[in-house]
Amino acid sequence: MNRIAFFIFLILCCLPLFLHLDVAPLHLWDESRQAVNALEMLENGNWLVTHYQGEPDMWNTKPPFLIWLQVLCFKIFGVGTLAVRLPSALAGLATVLLLFFFCKKYLHNQLLGFCAAFVLLTTQGFVSNHVTRTGDYDSLLTFWTTLTVFLFFTWVNSDNENKKQKRNLLYATSLSVAAAVLTKSIMGFVLLPPLFLFLIWKNKLRTLFSSVHFYGVVGIFLTIVFGYYFLRENQNPGYLEAVLENDIRGRYFETQEGNNQSFFFHMRKIYEERFVPWLYFLPLGFFATFFAKPRTKEFVRLLFFSGLFFLLVISFSQTNLIWYDAPLLSLWAVVVGLGIEKIIRVASSHFSQEENSFRFSKIIVVGAIGLAVFGNPYFKRVSDSYTFNKLWLTPERELFEGFMHRSVPLEYNILHWDINGQVVFLQQAYHRKGFDIKVREINQLQKDDSFKFVESELDFAIGEKVMMCESNVKNEFEKKYSYEQINNWSNCKLVKITSKK
Image (cartoon, rainbow, N blue to C red; front, side, top):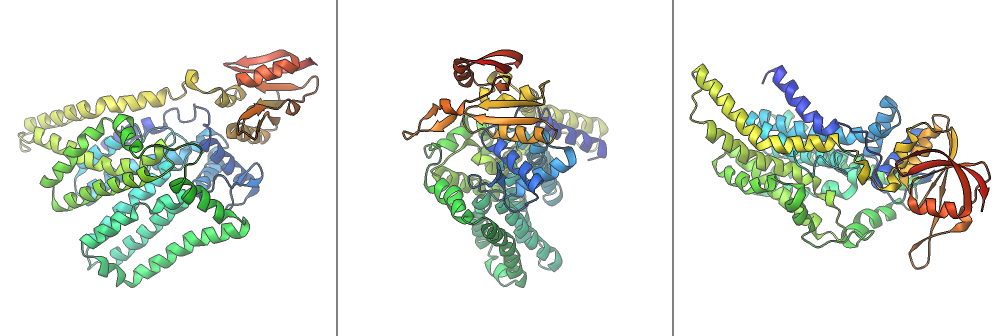
């Protein structure tokens, strides 16, 4: 593969992942909250404890690996939506390239690398909200879990005579698991059981436990992971209890925020949208292992069963959200890629590699099959990325960012309903630019757990400027104040209070 071909391949990888990445507004709830965590970390310099509105964040209790990367992007690119989302998009690109280079270099099968990379790149559940297109944890987690499986497989099959390489692979695997845990807590451990079973099947358990480096690896892992949790608890008492409640007991054994689904929720979503059309190729990919080289057969079957195990784990969880399946998509992309690779090889096998005319014909056939298989899914992902800012589908509570990017005064109030991380982030980001923006929230949780407007919270002076986007907020505001409109955009408007009613 020459440099020009690789450059074209890289451009094709980047388009669905980076196109219009910063156009859509920050999403509620998670992305905007992470954005606030990162911005406050940038401001307060506390790289250990994440904060939200000046207080330690005890709702989002994930470790701060993603937040660190977002802060780094703030420092390089400035505070904004692009910097919030770049770590996820870059992690997505890294995962796609990991699939390609591992198949090319380790399995010596460049065509499989292309197929696996394009399967993942055209997977709807991967190039989507909450994974590679927003500033959330799942894209980065997917990279680390995928790298962990690849490194571990390489270690198991590495040459015992090359002790330095075997040692380095073991340490790299440990660091990858630690990074996964520091990205999304306990989810970083989920793929370890199938890897342990693979170790037993390969009769390498004694090799692992008899290696002095294994205990060094365990020591480094414990130092990194437990060191973080110990230091965080020391600075932020009660954090470990919050982690237990939010990330373990309260998520896997109990339903959080009404996100309870049936056992078949993830299976149904994978079938309906998340892994379409590639799910239909999955049996073919597994069947193709019977005709693959021994190392490829072993590797693809490990990925298939590891993905299946991951699917069972998230299916048993009492809290189910659609993006939990992201790490298994990268594993199954290689399985599907093997099936497609076999189709291409069989279709082009009757062309000789000796004569130039036949070689050219083979290239045409391979290109035609590749375009037929990947063309429509690829252009669908590019189209979705290009039209990512679907204004007519954007909830009113997420429209503030679009209005604030337009011409507005340096001093005004944002009036909104309910907790809104996007508004908090925008207020702090614009404060850095010299704006004096105040945020007013006008809801209150009642005893019956219903949200209700509280009139006493709505208290403005004559002449104050107020910006609103939500219809229920505007309706309540208009009951109490008369105003003149200064500016408007979509459902949002900026007004100046002229009198009280």
